[in-house]
Length: 374
Image 1 (cartoon, helix red, strand yellow):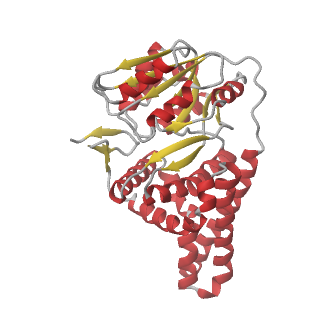
Image 2 (cartoon, rainbow, N blue to C red):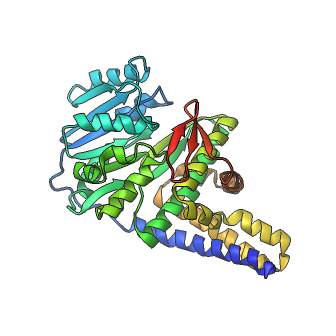
Image 3 (cartoon, rainbow, N blue to C red):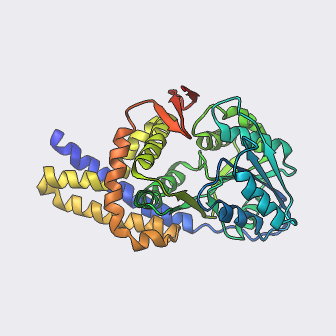
């Protein structure tokens, strides 16, 4: 019986790779409708410090080719250096209505959610686009979002993202993993169960949907507030989609230790948000499973080889066909290295219930909520 366990796990990974390929093709087959009469949009941008490329990222939102939108920024402190960048751009683009809010210290763990809540209270429009500071877009982004929200049944849309690394080999590996592995899981979940979650970097929603789920008060104590926001919207019966618009997520340059802590935080958060799904991520790691089978039971070499081949095809389907990622196309030989590192961090994610985030230590509760330790 034990002799068949590893082949069964590898077979599961092979099937998962096939599902990833199918899911990628199905996603690309969906095109946004033509824009007829787009609703005005309020763009909410929480800021905290000056990320690499912050000015360029924010500039892409000021340069949107869309008739009616505003941009709101929020910082925690009046001494935040991001204010200088935001004010410079506001002066350069006076034709774009924009405001900056100093929120003060958040009264609960998730500072980003507090910033969003404060901005939503001052936003003028009912279609809300929430985008992190490390997002870069083309000039047609808001037009695509508006076109999708012409469907009156749609309550929330979340954008898939193409990870763009900074000048660090570790962020390059992470970007390759996000573009060949993470997005595959998103696409498979979308195909098999529909969109019952959201992705944090960029989410668009109707104000009525946000109000209907209980506002930001409903997600203020969760680390993965994006996932919970999409889950609550779907449970409420509002339409949730994976947008056809792909954003650039500039993940920055991190040294090895910082990158590993970041990965560990993400894995521990995912384990708390989706316990069963986290265990199921075993099948999203075909390479280490196939290599283990090859070494332990050489007679199954054909299954291992087929799984490795399909992993490569699935990686191309997501990074190439869906995301049009030139980085992965150029450095595809690094995918096996990233896969092994990703598997190691997945295992590490089963241990420990604390995370480090922006210099502070938090405890993760069983349901995904978190609280400050020190």
